[in-house]
Length: 356
Image 1 (cartoon, rainbow, N blue to C red):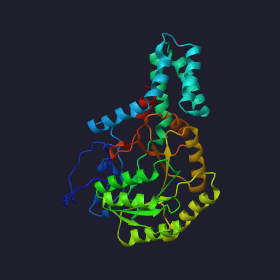
Image 2 (image 1 turned 180 degrees about the vertical axis):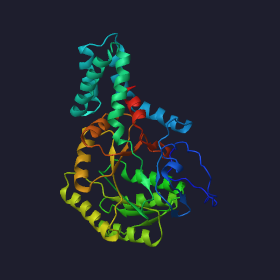
Image 3 (image 1 turned 120 degrees about the horizontal axis):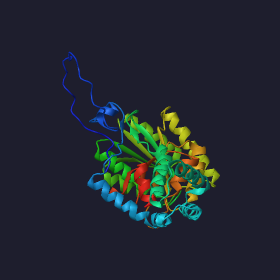
Image 4 (image 1 turned 45 degrees about the vertical axis):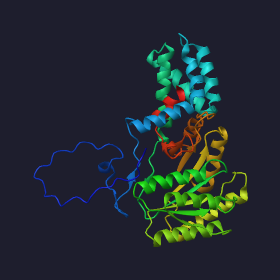
């Protein structure tokens, strides 16, 4: 599991030390490293969502589900390295396997070029050693996507969430709401998806489950709902306002324009908002996911991604394509519908799961 905030009691005044010893380096994402915490509803400073270096039992259980979800792709790629020598046939088979994983042409060519170079420089002659080099290369490629979601620089932190219908957008919002609320943040939901039938009701169910407030209007204008939610969030002292927008395809230009309008109207309620613009993408859609990332980023200026449904038939290589062509941070990845099946993204964990 992951946490957004760390609760602690205010420290007592400390006497000035005569000669303080040099402190040990704090781990990334710890309260010391982040420099603050959430105390009650008063946000002192932003806290990073930590990515643990050593997987605790709960995360290991989740990693096992991720490996199972990407198992078909991992088996295909791993099988390439089952021989006894590194030759041209291996590289050709690896190229096919990477393309079949939805890694895309650009990322595949980059990985193969770098793999050949490093193998030559390092004198790598055994397939198993070559696979280890590939794991390191893919980890390096995915590293720019590994960035924590920061909550607390503004109050409220306004998060606008977009995505096509069926990607798991509203469910992801519900999961985020649960985790935020569990870690002490007060959350206000905005049902700005007035386009899809029953979307408002679905979000209301999540609000009831998580015991949080919701702003909604039957048949209301999405931009107006968003404006009211941001205004209400400020007036009520909420920590986070999560805005659920209507699912749409990038080709639906009139709906994409509506998204731009929602963003403009949010800025009228709070000039610095939205502070996060997230896109939820379905891990099963392959290169279509990259197309969605490009289109929504061009329209809204994305700050992060949530990749869902990385189980069953998901190939997973599309994250390599995104990292190569549009490296927008992946805040969370999901492997199912259950609450605990949404986790922070870790580049090395994902590379190992994808390559087997």
